[in-house]
Length: 324
Image 1 (cartoon, one colour):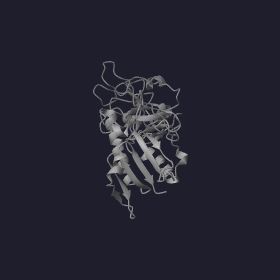
Image 2 (cartoon, rainbow, N blue to C red; image 1 turned 60 degrees about the vertical axis):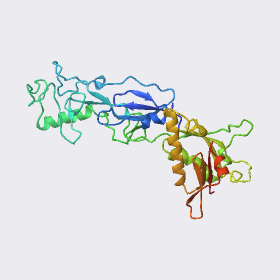
Image 3 (cartoon, helix red, strand yellow; image 1 turned 135 degrees about the vertical axis):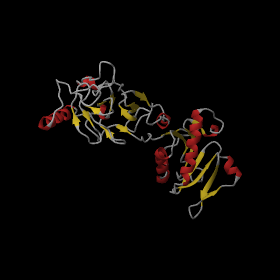
Image 4 (cartoon, rainbow, N blue to C red; image 1 turned 90 degrees about the vertical axis):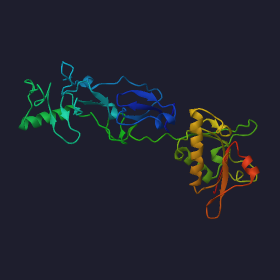
């Protein structure tokens, strides 16, 4: 299960209050959005947290004013969805957001009104004798009462942060709208048991920056393994300016082209994005991998490497050299 930088587990939460664990970035990238799809966002929770039972507006004291004949009336009618800060949002058969007493709120800035059963003007509908539609000062007081009762039923704007504690749209852990995938995981393991594992702290500042940037800047990248870093070979590895990556998204680089299935396809896509990304990083002086390689000239333009023995030596890993 994926975690954020604070070691909290990531869940996908939909507008009905359902939670789905995020097992990979593909769960986020491939989840559909659209008019016919339930809205969803990503939440970060402590490891011990478990999904609660979804709450309805009725649990807060709302009345179901739907008609007994099964027709949708002007009340909540049981139509609710969970919004920001784990607060339920009720809405009626006309798509208007509703309050605990059946009040209707126009999200376009329209009036707040009280009603029970069918509203006046609707077929067969007259104002309920017990709750007549208020006018003048009484209407204003009724509107204020509805506003007071529905205080805390929050509507999250797309892309805003909703507080875990229900404290509004700031400083929380829920993100509604476009989601930034969590950083890719970087491991440091030499596949040769007779050789030491590389260490990030042994790299040059430029190489360390590259290995930090790769975590967040390469689309579809979920993980990489650094097979080798600083070593005494007389080349850029000696000064810590070179890193070898032998695994992308859990697939060995030498197996990228031959692998089958969705996981292998995603790894190939991530590897291709890695190659494109390196070209646009001026601090990367050289990239060599299974699909060829290049070295920057004095004008910082990538020039293809044509020496075959060099290319053949990098079929099973990506070699990245930085300028500093």
